[in-house]
Length: 228
Image (cartoon, rainbow, N blue to C red):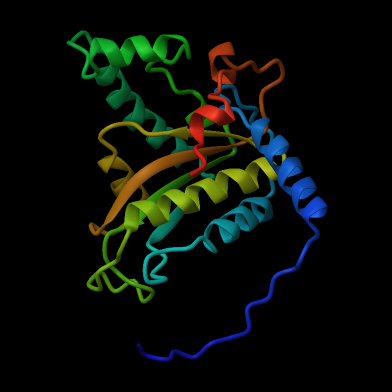
């Protein structure tokens, strides 16, 4: 096995009590994160979004190729273009365009408790949209040729860290995944080897914003974990 250049691994050592306290406190904060569909147009400093993306960019990745790109949209014209294109796809998804819905009845039934529909005003109202792209090729040099590895897993971890950091900064978030999403590559002027994964909407909640009660239903620990 080759011997690469190395650096010392440093990590604060905590007592078991302190480690548990920190883990429990962070878990409590993250449990308060809810998907918000009613945003305020109140500005959010760009530096906060930059810090959150910097945190996401520190995620582990296959071969350390960091196969992600975050296109950050604050321009009203670009946000409008994204909303118009996304809603066109959503109307086809829900059958709101007069045709048969692309989504099956089972899928539509699963969404009813969340109250979603083809109208996505948050894409235009919220101060920031972060379009996450997965780079199927490119490597660290982003040359469009080098093979990347474990792309979906790597980008998924980065998105989780992005959402967690935005929440820690006191911002409301929403993940939006219109299908298909090819229009995002065109609008954001990204290369063909990048695949749009999701739009992360970030900003402050609108006054009086609510969330569906169904969103608070979470599986208990004993259902999502097993100990062997």
